[in-house]
Amino acid sequence: MSTPKKSNLGRGLGNLIAGGAGNKPAPTPAPIPGVTTSTPSPSAPVGILEVAVGQIVPNPRQPRREFDDHSVKELAESIRAEGLIQPVVVRKVAGGYELIAGERRLRAFKLLGIKLIPARVLEVNDVVSAVLALVENLQRADLNPVDEALGIASLMRDFKLTQEAVSERLGKPRATIANSVRLLQLDREVLGYLTKGKLSAGHAKALLGLEQASHQIQAARRIVEDDLSVRATEKLIHQLQAARPHDRRRKVADVLADIQKRLTSHLAAPVTVVRRGPNGQITIRYVGDEDLRRILEKLGLKGD
Image (cartoon, rainbow, N blue to C red; front, side, top):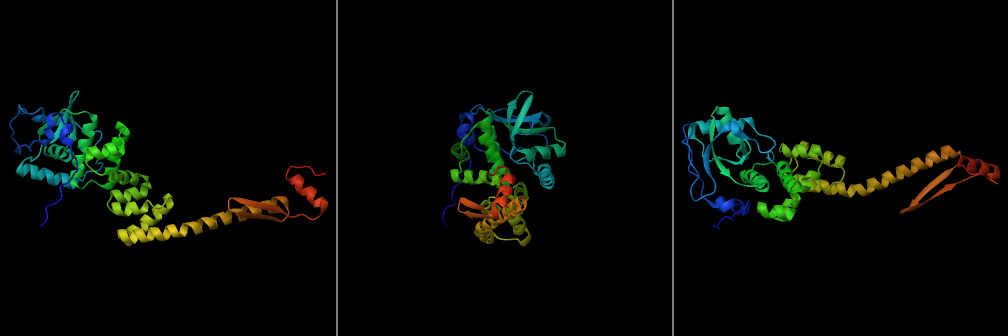
């Protein structure tokens, strides 16, 4: 059996934390309740402390926008029975601490009414804090594609990072970063299906082949209603793309026919509008000089 391939996710994050603390082994599980206050290890610039739950403020760059109440309750019961296996991660801010990772754990403690929570305190800047928050959620493998894309886009926007820079910090190929951010070009309704798990990232990638939002929505609804696979979706998109040129030609013909009809009505004379590529020709038929003068007057011109 071949050795499983090691993930590059978050590669080099230990170097982002002062002293390479990210390479240290996980702390000993802390039983709850009754954890005695510990002090930071002399060999590390960061450590595990007991922090008042009320002193921890949410992470403003938390990539996960929705939390399942049921899963938080299950986690709370697990913590009640077994204790907290992994402390939350915070950083010191004015007046308390800001959460970096562990939102569900913090919510579970609040649900249980426990006042103190074991926390790993890091000394990191805004960029590293945001990266760690995103990596922690990506490593859980249950962050939906939309929240992942929004998290990456936030890193790029807030800290002026390129896709290449984000790729290096997250340990993901640049193409993966680019494809993730591209998902945000989809219509809001389609993104809603993606967030709720009704569409996969593969479905969404295929839908990007449709430029107009109305076409994306139409195709997405059909995918959801008919429970189409990614391969079936790609075939559907290909069929829709093949039909679009014909639809555009028909739309142009309808517009020209409407123009021709309105000119004929306005001038009270037969008008023909013909298009040849980017150019065209408008022909106005008249009967006699008097009819010509009448048409010229309609056009705001004076006839001799």
